[in-house]
Image (cartoon, rainbow, N blue to C red; front, top):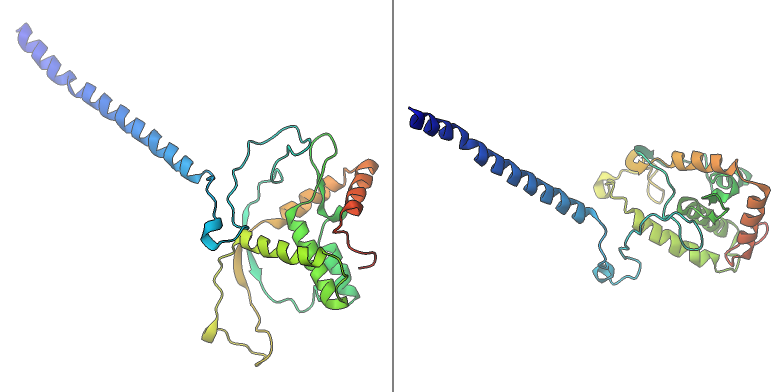
Length: 240
């Protein structure tokens, strides 16, 4: 009787070790899969320069976030989380023209106070934010078109900087072309881009954050930022 009891008990317990082993193996496989996915998402040290034989296309390692904010030890980006938003892109014939007093005011106001420069950390350390740098360059090119080249290296710098910024953004929104593009204004005019929706990062968050930070600037921060701008060869001439 005892023998039959133990045989029956062993038969009932046998599936449990098998189940346990299966569970452990499944858990290990899932951990390996997750680690592989994380590894696949991390930046690679390989260069993209071979793709188009361009020195602009390089994939750089993201360094460990620094804390000292001294010398070259600083984060690569602003400490901001930007949500994804939809933006309807269209031709604006009323605002941001090339010529005119109103155009000057609108283009000058598109960047936050202080040109969009920011300070990070307890010790003043000024940085330019790429978004505002790009808009500054676009405004400079507008002025070149309106009033002529100023004779500085800044124009060539801006063309190259914007070229690389566009490639970096790599906007892949599809836009109708060919026979699908109907120009209601006739040949020789610009066909309007009406409400073509692009998926963007919320730039208003960057603007508002920069304005808030600028409100905390001390007189010393203002002086330091002005001195740094004056010391660069890319400074725009007075009145330009």
